[in-house]
Length: 269
Ligand code: NI
Image 1 (cartoon, rainbow, N blue to C red):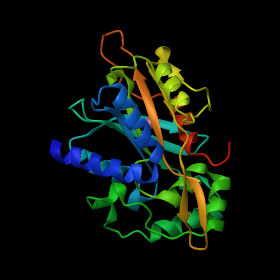
Image 2: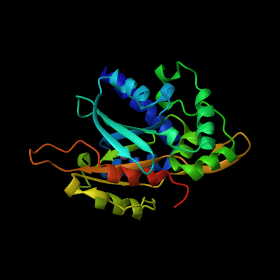
Image 3: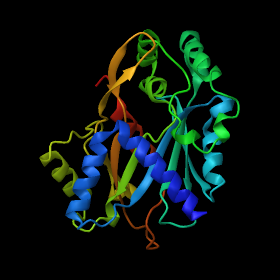
Image 4: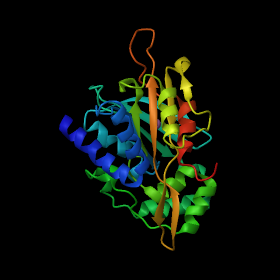
């Protein structure tokens, strides 16, 4: 079972770095500072729509089948999103954060574009072993992409990239050379990487038991049905967790911080 989990995350990682070259560079940099010790993932995040065929629970089922358990729920009213996080009893396995867009809260025009995309997905797709890194199952025009973008950066990202890891997250607690998130950020900026500054470079902190930062997503060319266009792909996140009064590390997520982390894939600032 653990081998299956490791294989899944290895496949997700390969797919992720294929469209996020900066993440591979950051990963190599951190490994170099740590004498080639393995970089440990805090969590991996996924996005979807709340349409039955491929909703959050369908993605979650893949992880539940591997022994993961649901641990937390989050609401992002302004972005029209819901999310849940999942943990494995083996705490060395990455946590999983899955969000879904509340499609019914958008205009008929936006709903129609999303419904059409999802209609193209095979009914059995969500149960397939490779579904979590299967990408898009549709073709969309750049015009429809722009329509989605006006309504929701998240919807536009899904239209361009589909099902895959939206980001991996380095567990700063497990790094050897760097002890605190601010030092990781400083080194990344020195190396020329661009960080998400929405809500400040560091979201959260000791007061909420979790500090997070992230790169801005890479810009990658996507073939739309009518033309090619450079759009944001994925980003890399960094998380430092703090101990609770009982001495254990906080394992949850902080909605106010996650809200800003979502903006790492924004086209518009
Ligand atoms: Ni995250």
